[in-house]
Image 1: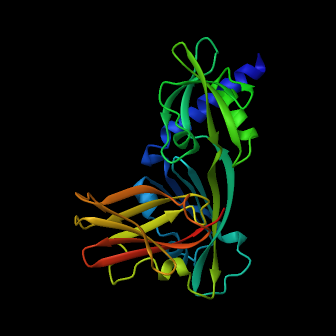
Image 2: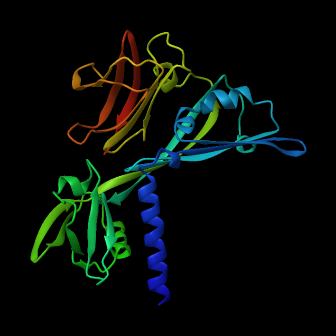
Length: 304
């Protein structure tokens, strides 16, 4: 009974998290500043404010404080970026620039949002996340998953446990049901990136800052970010601009060869999309946004 209750709680918690991933307010950053007497100020940022918050600049502008703590999380359907900075834990504060350190882990991921059935006979697929293993395997809404690679699925918790026990890249069989029909589908287990990001002082200017914008545009008027970086498959792109001109999205290899081009009309100030590198080989790529006469660039490293 206790195990069933624990599983149910885990399922509800994960479902709440998944639903929240479609809502920008799950992107949150908190800033705490201290003087010799203790906490001075707390700042809480959500959504676009969290995404556009310039952490390196804030650290540099406030390095006179007794202590500065920045924490938060940026989430998409296929990645979570956890941000941690504590000035008291810096070993060396010599350096003109602030560099970002990223450690990324990849966990098995199927890519469906589902609900357990009242009869405990499988889970009903309610949503299939684009570009994931489930989407590539042809899983569709309103199908029921009853087995995952030989493991009987009685609840949502069972499915999550089975996926986590698999290996990224495994070819697994899913027993499916729709109405009175029973059949199998095969998928290649995908991955979800969990990145831990922290910051430190450094002597050399970070590449991602120097190449972030390849023009003289004001940083407060436009910003381009990509995460996770490095990525094992998908890079989530977020572009903000005060201009309403059309946006042209480019992906190039390191030599400048064009791989992908897409035009977004009726731009309303924010563009968020996921780009899948699955068909590309390991290496460095350039994501570029063209808007009017301005060009914004990010380098993304693909690892597999």
